[in-house]
Image (cartoon, rainbow, N blue to C red):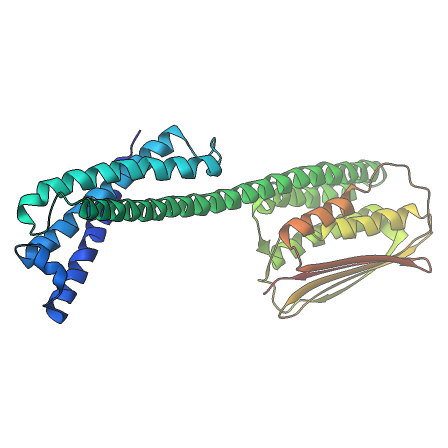
Length: 352
């Protein structure tokens, strides 16, 4: 179906192109008033009308044929090596016929020999050349518009894929976190009901953050730190004297925006493997600092190597995937185990 907007654009373009020979003619008329070509016509304005009229007709013809070819040989289904020759032949034939008919129509108003084969051939050749050039122009414009649309669609598709991947990773984080936390509260409730109730309060705040705040693409660093503080308090209640925890906070600007739930896997991993190492009391140090460009978390915990069960490990793996999606080339995450101490450092570039 031929779009009305398309034909309006064709009409505007055709009128604009038709004005080109008029402009050149006026320039030549005033600068070279003795130009021999004007002697082929009875008056100078007939020369202008003749050239403007044929240019307009050839432009409209090229546009109409181009649209017809596009409908019959769409870009998505036709090789360009086939489409372009068909298009050029399809526009050249009507151009020659239109030029011949137009030439005959203007014969009574021309001084030159209308039926001279040389004049007819010259005009038809000129018409075909003009039409081919106009067709290539419209074809190029259409291809450029298609290219721009494909870039926009590709960008939207990448964004949708990114959102989908992040949602999948978040959905994996939540069950992993819930499993560990509910198991902790269950154990704690049997030992100390009062601490169990306090743990449930912290746990409800954690859930509220995960269910609502973490849906945002970015949150304030203050909100993220409050969430982490609730998690740390929950783990301290659960582990009691088993952990010797120290914290170091140097965050002058808490309004920095960061992606939610990025720091949790690191701290959770430290609590989990510190306790699992079997030490009577293991040391855990958590340091948070920011500057004008970076947010940095350093987490160090004592540990003893223990056999891996084959389960777990989702937290840090998901963290790496999320960092690649959200902060490509803007993060630095390292881990190291040296002399009974496991260290994890995450540095995020929050500003360009």
